[in-house]
Image 1 (cartoon, rainbow, N blue to C red):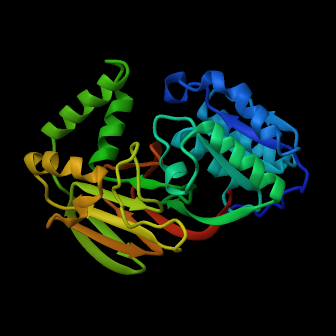
Image 2: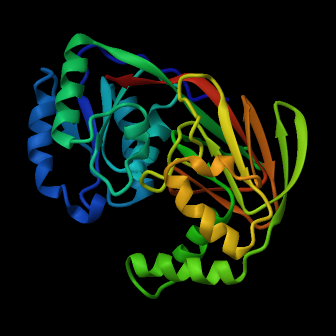
Image 3: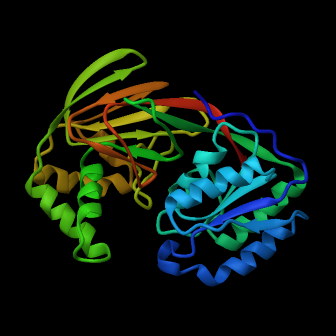
Length: 307
């Protein structure tokens, strides 16, 4: 079931979801200038107040219900992910100002890498009432819960590492993720996955599983290098029975997207992906997602991107 369609008021205010701590606060001081640049569209600009991820999603939903004419996310993939939960499947135009550590959705959909240039481009698009349609993926869990993602769903080793890192209280910062990698490498084992791709079943033993609407995750790792967010399809990349040594050799190749040429890697394409395995919590756009089993469905033109 798609999100309810909401018509966007022609002159409604521009709601802005900003994450001041994105990229470790590197762009925090830019926010007033970004708001000024967005105001050049001739619309009121309203910053949304949110202290947590749940509050961010609630604020976006409230802004759209209150008549916002557009929604802009200022931050990284996590901020985009929260905003997508409100704007997906609606007629409300959406813009991204990349200001995070990972800006994969912005990069893969053509946003300028410079935050100021991205804000200027959004203002120009707002003045011209110009958008372009972009696909999103809708997730449906076993209990009927639905979520959306724009870039990549991780359901293999990377998801397991993220889950462990998020449970750890020490050390702080990037070293916690590094330690989680070491722990999970020591425990590495292929898992049995059941995939149904447009109804066709596949049983695979795998270490890496990714479902991509876009090509990249993790700050430029092209895990689904052929994914196109305008083709109405999802790309599924499966890395099979890697041992530790093979995984460590293949992992750097993901940044270039050349890992798909490895004999243990298989690529598929489908509109609907049913995915099942024991003990996996997925990560979508780098954010904690749904437990397996789940269904991912490509939804063409689910987003009206300001470009």
